[in-house]
Image (cartoon, rainbow over all chains, first blue to last red; front, side, top):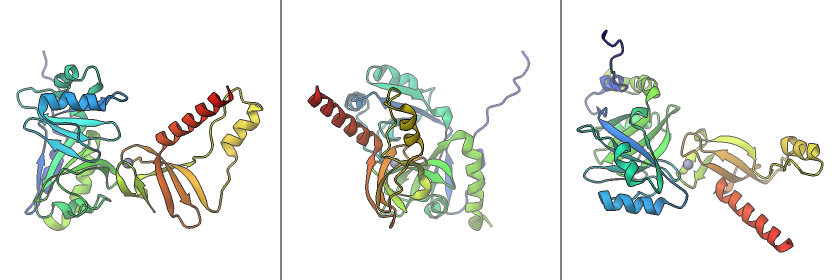
Length: 191
Length: 102
Ligand SMILES: [Zn+2]
């Protein structure tokens, strides 16, 4: 067998070079993500099945909730995503499909998304340059989720900590465009 | 202009795509005078100076279709409803009317 030509590469590796004092960027290449779309009228049944297994019900619109070993996040009308560390080959699609086989469609999302956590005293100001929503603490709090855009690139933002810390999730093929924007948005900090 | 998406809250116009008049309904293929009916559906609009119902898509947000009632003179938005809810209401009204006439 010849050596494979293609090597695995991180989609978000280009995000980290802009990290600086006051802006930490923790890229999350270690996640397993699954989409959950309850069939019509079945959201309650999905919520109950998840609560029984993980102790978490489906969160309300624009919200995210985390337990010991899983995070559930609103992902649009009648849609949610489940997020967890990949750990020892954990695969949420494989894990959730049997649990929700009756009331929901479960779809693998891990390889579709690029994820990073932005924290530090400059995190809010840098993200506010590209995102059109109000990130001030009176408008956006820990556990809040917004589906919006950053410099025209579709992103889902969640506030994950009070520092503040924000998780940014976007479609993987836009990761380089986002890195490009990030370089410009952070130029004043890194110069 | 800002639109209060029922799912996402108040968002800027840059997140939305405009489709057009929400008051037109596609005729059935077996409508009387189908050519006239489809011509009217495709081309004829009221263009009111005042309140009108418009379809907007939350493209850079939750991907919901919305029916926005907006005054064309002032851009003041009187209501924003999910297009799905509006369509289901119309269907319910239509089936009640059918039941009554049956
Ligand atoms: Zn929305």
